[in-house]
Length: 501
Image (cartoon, one colour):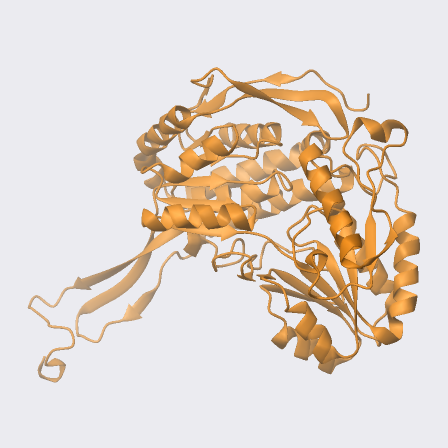
């Protein structure tokens, strides 16, 4: 079996120690390309385990928050450097544990490396501002303070990149962390945290509890976590928001997407097809930014559809460790069934299934969770397959007559994460930039491919307005403190009788 290794058995990482779960229950992480292969065995954590992790993080907070910002940056840079040295090892592990093809897994690790290097530089930047006071002999300025102990709950589709988006800036801002990674990718999370420890993060600054939603819920509800950073489904996000709201706890939510590519009749059609193929089927469509809607002007609809279907049928499905494989497995059997249920929904709604639409079972594919890349045509904006996030290798073609109709169609879902337009008309491009309702807009590129130096996040039901990455990311992980220093030697009253003072 390709890439098979001995299964890892480990406990939670709390206070720099490996601890068995209090309940004694465990779960297995399995290779989605070969579900008989066990990647590792991990504790099924309970509220008691989470409590131990929070206590550990609280104890470590004073020491870490008093660590100078440049030193924190040096530790994070060291972690990024270690990841760079072990990029291939981490990528191969990721492909085994969650299925994405090796080239994409390398990209996932590279994104974490980039985030580490980017955030490390923040350690020597000004972390506040000075402003003029309205009074004489008075100094006014701001500075950042850490939030405290924060909870990070992350998904399986980017098992190293997404934790890095949250944990690196959290640590840079002086917070300590309780980390609950996805149940499907615990070993990737373990290796990520081990690298942080090796880089010099002190014991207790980051604590990791493995498990299912029981552990995640305990992290959210624990009174010792002052903020929650979550990436996942909109339904779960609503529950987390309600809990945090009742506790007056800060919460950052990065949720779903129903992203669309607009293809105008003046577009470079070959480029648009190539972008749609990558956007729809990269990571087997398991991206919150996946191009699950293709909104095509009718004049080029036939040519675009024919080219896309031909290219889709040529995609090679298989184990992501095998050279030449384009599309790996989906994460688990539950998701496999969910994806196929949307194929059935699309057919029932009257959409035309052009290719795919079935579980792939030929040969070695029967050992994993593979779904044939699927294209629907004749889709209308009101159909469920055009409105609901499928999170699999399925895309829908929606014909439109004009740019105005294309923009209306693109904006017609509850989500607003990523939208794209292919056009060679500058007027079309700038109108789309202005009118598309999304946190991210691409011109002549698909809806995937965000870079860490710009903010990542969406509008509408994609989240609650917070952003990850980018130059203002530390705003999410710190509190502003305003400071006034009066060296006049007398009482000065701001806003009162200022002319007389």
